[in-house]
Image (cartoon, rainbow, N blue to C red; front, side):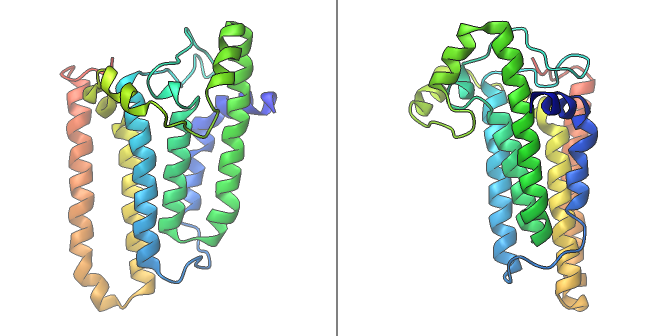
Length: 235
C-alpha cells in the first residue's frame, strides 16, 4: 500500500484530473429526480470546499511534496488538523462525491468514487509512513488522538475563535481548483439539462448558464491577477 501511495502521490497531478473527465462519460441515471440530486450534490461539493477553506485559512500545510515526493518540514497539528489528520483530502473526496451526484452517474458513483477514495487511502498510508519515520513518537501520539478521516468536532468553535483566518491565503491557494470543479459542475448541469429536458426550455435557460460561467471565469481571472501581481500573497 505504501509503494502504491508513493506512486500515486508522484503522478497524482496526472491521475486525479482523469476523474473529472470520467464525470462526462454517458451512464444510466442513478436517481430519477435530477434536480434534487443536483442540489444535493452542489451542497456536498460546497461542504467539501468549505472544509478545505477552513483548513487552509487557519494553517497551511504543504501537500504538494518536494520534487513530487512526499515531504514535510514540520508536523502540523493545529487548526483543523487538530480535529482530523487529513481534512484537505476529506474536502477533495466530498467535492468529487458532490460532482458525481450532479452528474447523476451510476457508473461514477459506484466505480470511480470508490477508486478515488482507495487512491487517497494509499496516499495517506504512504504519507503516514514518511511522517512516522521522520517524527517518530510525536506522530504516533498525534495518530492516537486525532482521527485519520472522521473529523472530531469537539472544540471546533474554540479552534476557529483562537486562530486568525487568512482569506487571502484561501483565495490564492484555492482559486484554481475551485474554478475547475465549479465550472465542471455547471457543464454537467448544462449537459443534463440538454439531454433530459425539452430543447425549447433548455435554450431559455442557456443564457443563464453562460452568465454563471462568465462570473466564475471573471472571479478566477481577478484572483489570478491579484496573485500574479503580488497584491495578494498565499503565505
